[in-house]
Image (tube, rainbow, N blue to C red; front, side, top):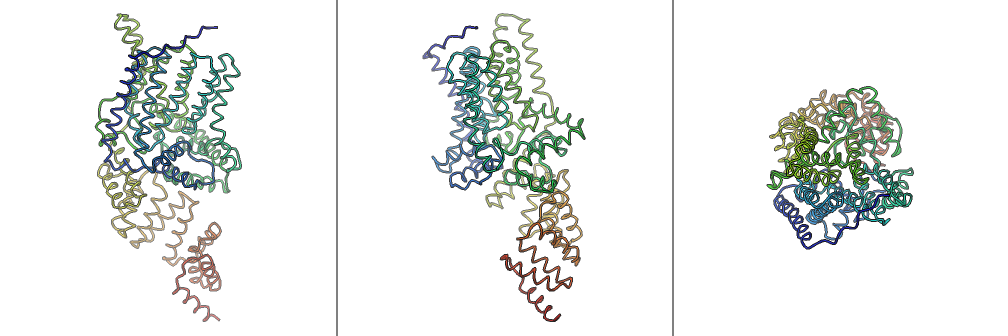
Length: 639
C-alpha cells in the first residue's frame, strides 16, 4: 500500500498574509464591479430566469409553491428565499452573499491546489480564480451559477483533502456537496457513480463508496420523494431532461445554443406549459411528467435517424462552443454588462487561458494520483453532459473550478523549466498548452456583438414589461432595433406594445418583420393577425391565425381568433365548426359559447343559439344585451 502524505503543517503567519492578500485581490474587483453597476437598469431587476427564481423564492416564503414536481432545479430558489427571509427582498444582499461564495471559491481553489501540487501552484491558481472575469460577472446577477461553482469547488476540495486523511467523513462530505450541486445543476447527478468509484478504490472500500453515495442521497432523496408523491410517479430532481435534450438537438436548432422551437415561448414562465401542450397535442392524449420527457427523447432520436449528418455537425459546433474562449450569452451578455462596469472591461483572466493551462495540467498529472484522475474525469464528463444538450457559458462555468489547480501547476512547471533551461521539456509542455489554446481560441462565428447587445436589451425590456413599465420597455426595444434593425424579438415586442396602445398601423411593419424570422413563434403570428384584423385586412388576418394553428394546434385562442375573423367575413358555418371544436376542448369558456350563439343565430338555428347564450350566462360570462334582445325577438317572431 502506498504511504499517505503526512497532514499539512499548521499555517505559518506568512501563509495567513498570503491568504489575506488573495482575499483582497478577489474582493476588490468584485466590490468595484457591484458599485459600478449599481445604477444599471438590470441591477435591481432580475431578468428571464432570474425572474423565475425570484418568483419561486417569494412563493416559498408565502407558502404558495405549486403542488407539482420541480421543473427547474430547486436549490437556488430556496437559497434566495433564505436570503429574503433574513434581509427582506434585497437583491443587494443576494449579490453580497454570492460575492462571499466567490471568495470561498478562491480559498477552496487555493487549498485544493496546495494539496494536489504545492503552494506555488495553489497561489497561481487562486490568483487566477480571484481575477476570473466570468466569476465576477455571474456573482453580480440573480442567477444560480455562483452557487453551483462554489458547491463544485467544495466537492473538489473534499477529494483533495481526503488524500491526507483516513477519516470516513470526507467521502460523506463530498457526497453531500455533490448532492447539493445536483440540486442546482441536475446534470451533476452523472458524477455520483464517479465519486463512489473513486472511494471504492480506497480502503475500506465499501464504507467509503457507500458513504459517498449516502451523502448524495441524503440531499437528493427528499426532493425525489416530494416530486414522486406529487407526480404519482418517480421523478428524481426535475421533469425537464427530455425537453432540454430536444431543445438542444431538435431539427429547429442550428446554433448549438439555447434555441427554442417556434411553438415555445423562450421564458421559464411559459416554457414548461408550451412544451407539455405540444407533446400532448401530438400524442393525442394527456401525458404524465415522465411520459412528456420520454416523448421529447423520442423526437430527438427521430432527428438523429432522419438527419444524422446534420446532427453530427451540430454536435461538433457544440463541442467547439464549450471549449472556446467565447462566453456564450443567455439572459445576460458579459459584453453588454461591461458597458456599465469598467472592471469587466479590464484584461482579466478568461476561459481560454485557464482551459489551455488546466487541460495540459490534467494530462501531465494523470498518473500522479487517483484524486488527480477523478477531477480530470469530472471535467471531461461534465463537458460531455453539457454538449449533449446545448451550450451556454453559465452551464460550463461550474466545471471550470476543476481547472484552476491544474492551470496553476502548469504555469509553475513552465516557469521552472524555463528557469532551469530545460528547453526540451519546456518545448513539449508549451506544445501541449498550445494545442489546447488552439481549440480555445479557434475562430468561430460569433458576430460583432450587436445582435447579442440587442438581445440583452430585449431581455431587459421584457423584464420591464413584466413589471408593468410599458414605456421603459418600449425604450429598450427601440434601442435594440437601433443596434440590430431586423431583430425579430425586439420588433415583435415593440409591435405588441403599439398594438396594445391601439396603434395597429405602426405595429404592423414591426410584426411583419418579426414574422419573417426563420423560427417565428406562434405568438408573433397571433399579434400580426390582430394587427391585420384591426386594419380591416381580414384575409391576411385569417392567414396569420391559421399559421398560428399550424404552429401550435393545442392553443385554443388561435382557433378562436380564426373563428372571429370568419364571423366578420360572414362565413358562419366555418366559424361554427371551429366553435364546436372549442366547446369540446374549452367547455367552461363563456366567450366561446357567446360567439357560438352568434354563429348559430346567423345560421337560423335560434333555439340552439338561445341555449348557447344561456350557457354563457351560467358560466358568468359577459352577454351582449343588444344581441340577446335581437335573438329573443327573432325567436318570438318564429313562433
